[in-house]
Image 1 (cartoon, rainbow, N blue to C red):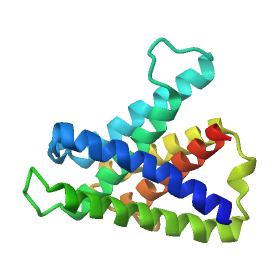
Image 2 (spheres, rainbow, N blue to C red):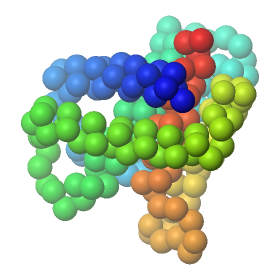
Image 3 (cartoon, rainbow, N blue to C red):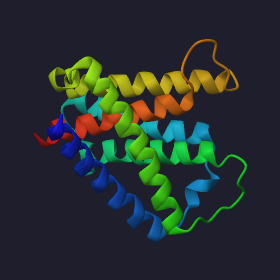
Length: 178
């Protein structure tokens, strides 16, 4: 489990580094996005990964790894947006966003550690393509929850699905690096 924790931190730190650098370039323009737009951005990235996995080739140079990083970062944007629903600020200071990034990535890691305890790191025996499919399933679940105006009868909410997509993407990054 220590190996997973270290690998997880390495992946998240790489994602955060990219996130903060892009924020310095673009500001927090993503504050304009509704949850449904964030979900669609994640869908596009996951669908591209699946197409590349199915076809075995790609025509755009961005590698699959960068798409998983994008899924992680958009999922964290989604969690930030959900928590700031009533905050109308468009521009947020870097230190505030950095703190929020750390908070949500730590929440996702805590969830991963709890699930790894119960499941015995079963993800290590999964295919990366299965992780892609699970991300696509989570996106479709979020879209259904959005279509239901955020209401669920017994299911987890949008935030839980964002956390799961972060973890599946981190697992994919770890598997791709091994």
